[in-house]
Amino acid sequence: MSIAVVTGAGSGIGRSVALALAAAGWSVALAGRRAEPLEETAALAPDGDFLCAPTDVTSEAQVAALFSSVRDRYGRVDLLFNNAGTFAGGGTPVEDLDPATWRAVVDVNLTGAFLCAQAAFRAMKEQEPQGGRIINNGSISAHVPRPHSIAYTATKHAMTGLTKSLSLDGRPYRIACGQLDIGNAATDMTARMQAGILQADGRLAPEPVMDAADVAATVVHMAGLPLEANVQFATVMATAMPYIGRG
Picture 1 (cartoon, helix red, strand yellow):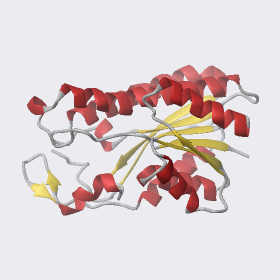
Picture 2 (cartoon, rainbow, N blue to C red):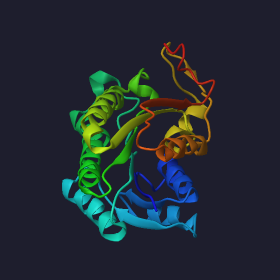
Picture 3 (cartoon, rainbow, N blue to C red):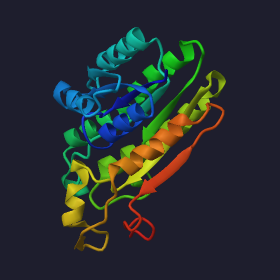
């Protein structure tokens, strides 16, 4: 039995990944701020083995409690999909961005990712047999920004550094770490893209999206590799979105 922790599991990509992992035979701890969406995710796969664990990833105590509850129930942690994130402040020009919004985005997207990765790393280092895998949800914005997205883009660039450091520091303990950079998966967060979103040349233009299930299939593939192999970085995106040639 393999044990996964998925943050941001109450909707969108997190929900799709959790359901795909369950279908592939994983037991999945569902983490997110509110219990109701997590329970809705679990209800979509009644035969799945889920643990619903309401968690604010910006809280060190709540993250510690999450991983303690997973280990108490299952005995180990084999996978963390570090997915929780926010696009707060997106669309706001840099000169108008409230520093409190900047800090809130950093707290969730970067500090929250660090806290979850740290807790997973500790568990994977201590358990027998030793090891596990961390998959960080990066973004196309880990490579190139959208207009008026400085907080989100900065955190996603930082996620790449987090991934590289975890990958290096995990080597002695059979802890693999990779990053999946996602572009235009169809979720509530990206709904506005189909109606029209600001482009680098100042136009508003609709953008194509892909099914979040296609992202989930990539995560399941990465997660299923033996720990001797690792997808270090992968990009999965809507084929015709403006990434290649963006700007």
